[in-house]
Length: 255
Image (cartoon, rainbow, N blue to C red):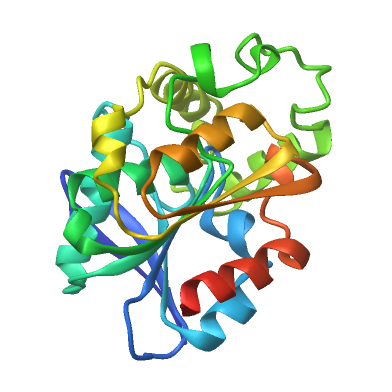
């Protein structure tokens, strides 16, 4: 079953899709990467994941089917939107799978409402400011020739996916400029906040990610119940690769 709908939450109409059949246990909330749509982020994983459980894919403010608004864009506001969506759908508890920006939002949901969260998958995400500890310097300096950066083909795919579904297709570049400060200037969470995240967490990064390998290790060490996977020969925009991610994610979510 696939069902796309909008929920009026916190002053915006938030788009979401419900996929798969009802199964025992919590649904899986999937949160896309920055400037990505839900489908562009996760389409390759959905046939397997939806065969086992209900999946709810969300498109955050200014992404995909969800229009931008005059409302400021922040990680906290996006997390509040997701929590409001859980309330709207009558979901008491959910597992989370966040990719990049979606990983930041998933972490903030877990920090803000830990009783609403079961298991968490954080793919190509971080806990600290990207300008200091989390990202490699060439990423925040926007060195376009870095092997870590998106290729021209990947950038075109992001823009095309947005324009195909967005209420205002011309908003792609303004939205990108709006979300970048929210991600790069985000201070992150304190050690004390992270230590209170006692739910199981699977951290996945690429060996050629935006995220520094040392930061991935730090993330694992800060959480009471975390696992860390580093994918070989994998960039930030390639982390959602079904050959490696599906086996570990399905095993993690089944436990």
